[in-house]
Amino acid sequence: MVAAFALFACLDATAKYLSAWFETPLIVFARYAFAVVYSLVFLWSTGTLSQMRARNLPLQIVRGLLLVGGTLLNFTAVRYLQLAETSSIMFSNPLWVCALSVPLLGEQVGPRRWLAVVIGFVGVMIIIRPGAEGFHWAAFLSLGAALSTALYQIATRKAAAYDSSETTLFYTALVGAVAVTPAVPGSWEMPTGWLLAIMCTFGLFGAVGHQFLIVAHKLAPAPVLAPFVYSQIIWMVIIGYAVFGDLPDLWTVAGGLLVVSSGLYLLYRERQIKKRAA
Image (tube, rainbow, N blue to C red; front, top):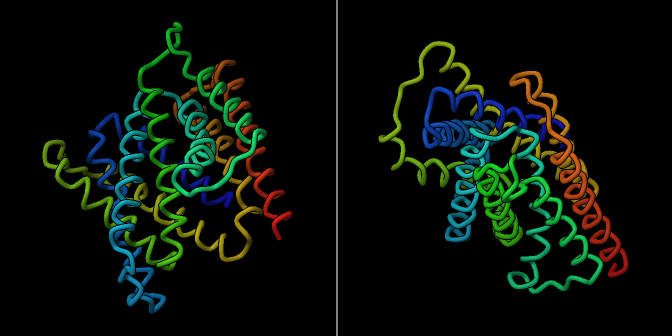
């Protein structure tokens, strides 16, 4: 899990780096095109090509569209914001999942978890600071990306009842590549030399990162793994400083702490509720 989210941090950092030369649709297309190739090679090497057939294709398509929407919003946001800032806002994802699980999954959320959700969103507003001097409109793109990926996660819960994780990995990449293709001609610019090498590596970051996620969930239960998601913010700060010379301000740190603390509390409460039910 830690390695997976280190790779996801590298993915965002590379997207930010490539944005100096290429438009966002082309960067997103590269991310998904390389993921399709990697998925096909993986399925072929493991003899599981037969798992490419989805048992619930409409749900897989919806999942893929939600994730590619979140990716477009996130990669556009990192063009303008620090990595630590976008990742802190993106960590509102569990708050969205908790709030949306009530109308979409019929789950019950108690008052303590609702309080954690409210506190977490206060942290998000501290990071964004609408109306303040340090405000940038791209912060709302990060918030939209968090909402989109939350809906993607809820759809993934439903897809797990129909298809294997390998099938889901393949369709996530395929739907993303197909969905963003119509936008590519208008932003097409052939990468050459070292930029082509960086773009190839960029595609591998996402594909291998998702593969690590699958392996991790085969080795350990999801509640044990979930807190390690937040290791990504450490990698984001390190890479952001090493590559771009960025350090988060006090507002981002304070808001990020509220968001992460709320997310960790939601994970803790979910684990306690599951233990009682068992």
